[in-house]
Amino acid sequence: MIPNKKERNQLPKYLSLIGIAAQMGITIYLSAFFGKKLDDKYPNERNYFTIFLTLFGVFMAIFIIIKQLNRINQE
Image (cartoon, rainbow, N blue to C red; front, side):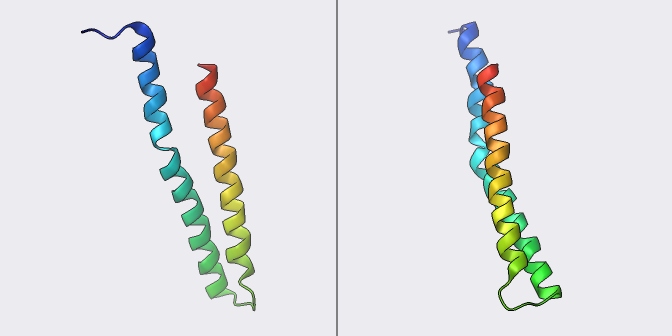
């Protein structure tokens, strides 16, 4: 059975949605990792680099996901 044109166009959309969780996880992990490295290099009492960079990573991940979803919906 040959898929019709609509089914063929939806397949890449599903494939791009699969990687969203991995992309969010990697973004947040890397920002927390670099925050921890900065806190090790420049010690302070409350690990401000880790906290700030982790929150920054969360907001960047959300921003990237929203941009991707808008692009997918426009196609």
